[in-house]
Amino acid sequence: MESTRKHLIELLTKQEGHISGQQLSEQLNISRTAVWKHMNELKKDGYEIEAVQRKGYKIHGFPDKISENTLQWGLETRWMGHQLYHYDQVESTQEIVHQMAKQGKPHGTVVVADEQVGGKGRMARSWDSPKGKGIWMSFLLKPDLPPVEAPQLTLLAATVIAKMIDERSDLEPQIKWPNDVLIHHKKVSGILTEMQAEQDTIQYIVLGIGMNVNQEEEDIPSDIRYKASSFKIESGLDWNIQKTIQHFLTLFESSYDQFIRDGFQSVKEDWEKYGYKIGENVTISTMKETWEATLLGIEPDGALRARRKTGEEEKLYSAEIHW
Ligand code: BT5
Image 1 (tube, rainbow, N blue to C red):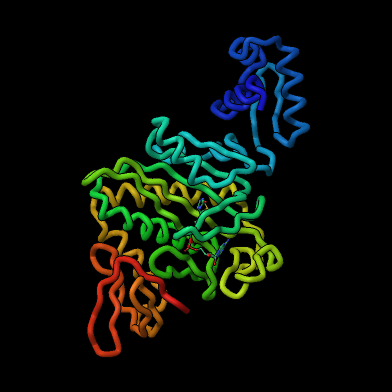
Image 2: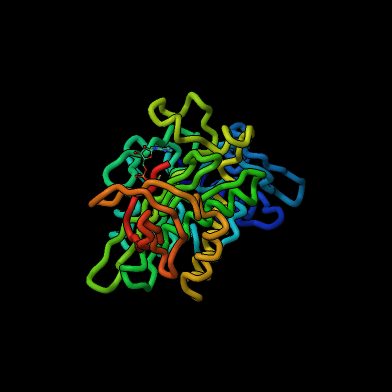
């Protein structure tokens, strides 16, 4: 976006009440006529701007299209998303945040894209991220934690997604350990946690979240339709992507702060409200074998606890649960 225009939107957004044409022209270093022309352009693009004689301008609404401004407008977080970047199309938001980490961007930096053409799942799997239909975003986090505790952030993110869905709808989200959020047994969201660490310190974490929001049945690739769905398919309603992101970031910030302050126990309690198939029989695959198990829950450190048919109990840090 042209920088004067971007700056103008920033000034309008930050102002509580009206801001006069004179103030704008001084701060932007352009004539008042130029301010007026920019305002007309913004209105044409869907910005709702009120102009009151002798008081000036006030912004009331943004166009539907997501942008850095629309996402930051009304975002009431203390650190999460204070640096926020929006892209129309990227390979993967994960890669962008890795680059940003190397450039020294701060804890809480958020990258959101309308579309990913190389969206990544775990273990080199791909993540379908169609344009404008979902939330494809990654965060830069710099927790002061030992690297072994990093996987707990995946569980934390899953509980925040579940809580957010719970608060915004009548749906009953569930979390399939470790990184899937399901509605009616279908995956609507996945989490990818990548870490850069040295010996016993985490340098940074890139936490990626994919949420299928407004896909219709035909927007879901046919080979995964049996196991994947969207908030819209399951609720029958269109979701406001901007508000959903803001709600998520706000909840994430408070859960993260609590986790850093009080440890994993607070996450565990939330997780248990949403745990999928706890107490039920499932099939589990690890690198070594596939076996029938009863899921027992999660351990105080976030590991999965499961019981074999023989009665033996296992603590798992890495496994796939099958339907
Ligand atoms: C995940 O992997 O669930 C992690 C997904 C993380 C995506 C976010 S989007 C923002 C950020 N940028 C990225 O590039 N990635 C992150 P995993 O558990 O491995 O699941 C991947 C599997 O889920 C695939 O092999 C498919 O079977 C299925 N799948 C692919 N796209 C899907 C979708 N949109 N919804 C539901 N399932 C999907």
